[in-house]
Length: 266
Image (cartoon, rainbow, N blue to C red; front, side, top):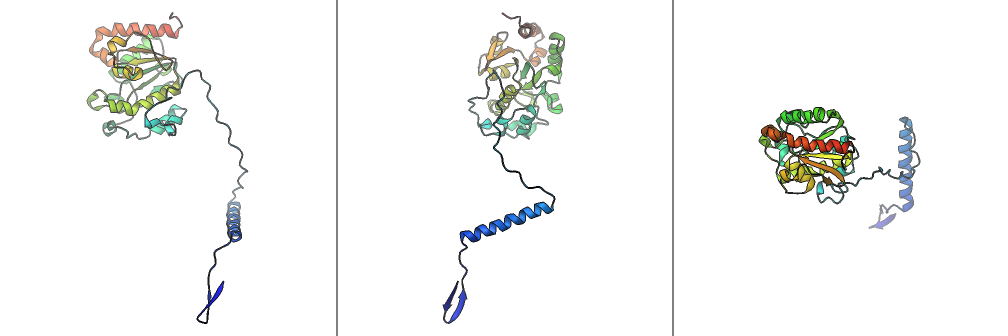
């Protein structure tokens, strides 16, 4: 567009029309496709509707349903994982509570990802923190004896994990905020493995799973339910190292688990 000002001709740029913009976009796209062709890249296929998400069949409830913890909200990567490996990846280099400051390794869990029997402890100790695997110290050897010598199973036949995944300093008890930070991950582990039976080892594991403050001494030896999964509360192996006389009580609890696995309980 040209106008006159003081006898001079001044060219003014006009706003591009829709047709001009479309032509420019077409030219840009054409050049982009030509570059792809020269690079040996084929044209993009015509988009097809996304396949419907496959729903994993199960007759067991999602134990994370209705959780109030923001860490595993419905849009989080961790809640949407369907394997233990993906869940571990979603946890990453966890900084969600103060235990991260003193840990060597996150102690996630070990064993059969489709185990019928799961053991849940309280938290890793020194040996577990150094090796990154739950129940490998003295208490872990006692648990291994229970599994192999007492139950006739292999350690790799079951799944073993803890409520908290990082070692509390000096092996102190995990604090409420630390349990709250890790509890969603424990729930997701259970949801992925979907065991038939959980053995809760010790006060903090049992009280977390049962949402109860009842002492472990009153809970042990009696079947409970965790979202439809049979739960047997019993003492922690570390407690048995300090109180060996109570090994007979844990053996009574384990015998109930063996009978349940064999379908012998009434």
